[in-house]
Length: 156
Image 1: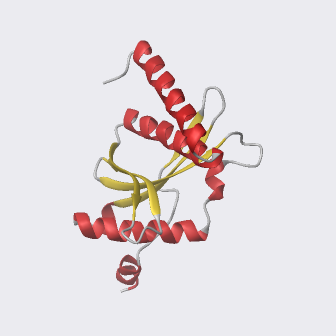
Image 2: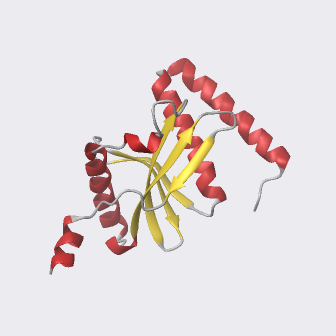
């Protein structure tokens, strides 16, 4: 169901008020990241994704997935990258090998808990540049992360 223009305005205002409250209590970088996650969450929902988890952490607490969602038959682990400007390059370029390893560990644990087959997993990136209005872009299948189990099957 599409939101009316009045609903969109109300949602934008509530997002901004939530962001202002976070800026008072959190570091600027953390507040900016959460604002980007809020925008990405709404962006994906508007495209039919069903969000099942936000800021999902491993039980050890050392790795986090920003969003986990169903997109049709695919379980998608979404990394949200936010920037105030794109002056220093696009946000999606800021994902290093360490983050890839964390996402793989999270996906393994989550799929084991939910019984989701590995061939239904996808890793996406949502890039958010907080211009006015924000520029939001989805990169489907942007991270090529494979489980050791799937690598072993592929080589067999």
